[in-house]
Image 1 (cartoon, rainbow, N blue to C red):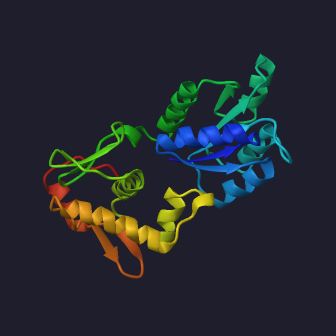
Image 2: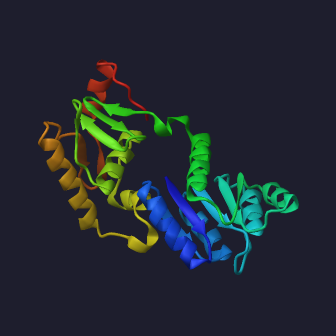
Length: 237
């Protein structure tokens, strides 16, 4: 899940980067409303965490602009204003939720989960392909019941492929989905992650799970998909 945080409080932004990163969310940060608007038009986000008091363009105005342009990305407003009038103004601007500062981190995470479920009820369903199973709630991947020791980024790569089994992802596609704008990797970094995934899969006999289409990118090997369908394995696209 890729989230845009539009917040000019650097301390809060730093704290949320740490917390959300541990939950496997990809987080980009904008420090003013105009920058946030530009980023939303450049990148497809799953959620926008939006401060109300912002330089250049306030959060209410940004939210209204999003809805006026028919951009339906979920928006959670964050503000110290807690009167009923302020909340109604925020929700009437098109926001999906309203969180009053200071807030408890666990409440924020719970509200993010609620909004993500509105996007898709499949977000916590187990994904499988042949003997490979990925459990989003446990954040683990198994092969024939054996837990595989993938790093966070390797896990996210495999999840990306399993959620879109028929899609070919170029290296730039992978970067757009899994890396924040301030930590963009080289193409060699993506290749290294793919290579490490394949080495770990090779140890359990599943090295061909990820197929390379030279000049195009990577995808799930169709033979794994067909085997999954023929054996009636659960597979969520």
